[in-house]
Image 1 (spheres, rainbow, N blue to C red):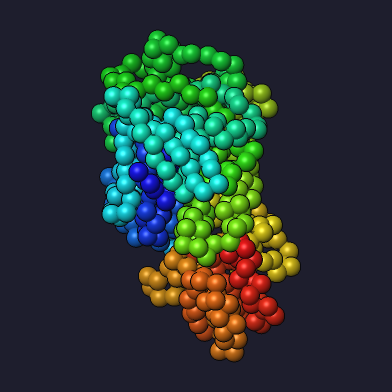
Image 2: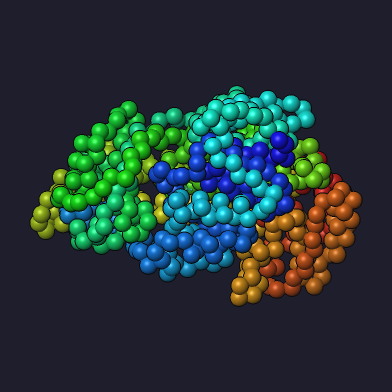
Amino acid sequence: MHAPVLIVGAGPVGLALAGELGWRGIACTLIEQGDGAIEQPKMDLVGIRTMEFCRRWGIADWVRDAPYPGDYPQDYVFLTALNGYELGREPFPGRAYEASPPESPQKRERVPQDMFDPILKRFAQSFPHVTLRYHCELTGYDERADGVHATVRDPRTGATETITADYLIGTDGGGSTVREIAGITMSGNPALTYTTNVIFRCADFPSLHDKGKGYRFIFIGPEGTWLTIVAVNGADRFRMSIVGTPDKVEHSEDDIRRALRRAVGRDFDYEILSVMRWVRRELVADSFGTNRVFIAGDAAHLMSPTGGLGMNTGIQDAVDLGWKLEASLRGWGGRALLRSYGIERRPVALRNVAASSANLRRMVSTRNERPPPPEIFQDGPAADAVRKAYGDWFTATMRHEWFMNGFHLGYRYDGSPIIWPDGTPAPPDETSTYTQTARPGARAPHVWLSRRRSTLDLYGRGFMLLRLGTDAPSGEGIVAAAMSKGVPLTVVSFDEPAVIEAYQRRLVLVRPDGHVAWRNDVEPADAGALIDVVRGQ
Ligand SMILES: Cc1cc2nc3c(=O)[nH]c(=O)nc-3n(C[C@H](O)[C@H](O)[C@H](O)COP(=O)(O)OP(=O)(O)OC[C@H]3O[C@@H](n4cnc5c(N)ncnc54)[C@H](O)[C@@H]3O)c2cc1C
């Protein structure tokens, strides 16, 4: 069997890559060792940039219509126990009531993995040239100059076969076999905490306490932050995480039940559905691939879930890879195009991994930096005042994690060999504030063109050359150069002041992934050289 692209691992990143390639008309095979069942949903924040990709793919409505109730309040609550004291709260409306920010046509969505993976799977399977094979485990591969020979095995029968591919992509998670065989090492901190996650079912959880419905409850005891509980499906399923420390520990079922009793502050009826003991890591692969083998998602970077960046970073990897694989397979991509994948994505992974750890440090800063004063666990007006001061400090400290649009949208490919810089200074890379910029390397800005149509809706299939203003140069030189190299390029002209204001130049070239590749007020002196740079030749 031969596949132009063989993807290993059908977690959210592999499924997104299969969908992205399918959407681009590229045949691929996605293999998964398991049966696709999700034993314990991990992610539940579909970030704003991922939603922009879903919009491009035409599946944003599927995510919006996922069965996580739209009116379930998304508050973050800081407390000593559900039947104890509330220390602080960051209120958020249910996802149905959250508006898109001005810088995007979309907003983040709360959709847990066991709702989101099936959406990505349905999207990937909507393309006849995408093949999904479950019970198919990669056991080895051999990378040659002209392709990859992969050995796969059916874990149920032990039967093996060979699949050849032009490119092999490992989206096979933290323990990636692809990464291991490629000999790619990871750097960072392999154990931030040993954490135990427990999914439990409780039909009437909100009635057990007076704190109301919320998305995440963060519990602070005399030892500092020790536990969190999140509303997994906005109904009867919850995830308790015993945060843990860098010291290896294995919580027993008794520990788990004691922790639940302590968190709620009373006995109650519940059913434990699954227990996942895991290590929170801060690791980035030292390389993102070779000539024909690449890694993406958790195979390439492992970060603390604090910030909801893990899968979202992986889906950005998939989008960066998608058009480069298409260009390489169709023949218009240059020799350096796929090499630019790691050059562009690794710095983003390092940035996001560091930010996620910083969020974790803030969450556990109650342990040593600012331990809770004993009064916060006591009754009385004097204790109330201490509790309020401590709660206000923690609420303000945690705000970095809840408002991260700058992180989700502001990643840039500065310094990439396939970006033509324009010499303007880099805008600050801020966590919460996102200032749109059309500086080469950045995500092309969103501007509403009509009530429902965004500039982002222009991007995706090939390159897009924007001519802005009535006196914009024709762009003919760029069009001719692109045509001569077989590079798909469309020209679109706008006179709307808001678009001109956001893009700042009269000619702007946007890549198929929606990042700006080049901009100027005049045609380039050598349009052929420009096209060669942006196609990685
Ligand atoms: C508690 C928790 C909460 C999180 N919350 C968020 C969040 O809100 N937002 C967010 O963006 N991220 C979040 N994350 C991180 C997110 O879950 C991961 O980043 C994401 O699941 C990674 O997806 P992946 O597809 O790269 O890898 P995985 O989900 O690990 O999938 C890898 C797949 O590859 C398969 N596989 C492995 N080896 C082979 C092989 N040899 N052959 C065939 N198949 C193979 C596996 O069976 C698996 O299905 C959270 C993580 C945790 C632990």
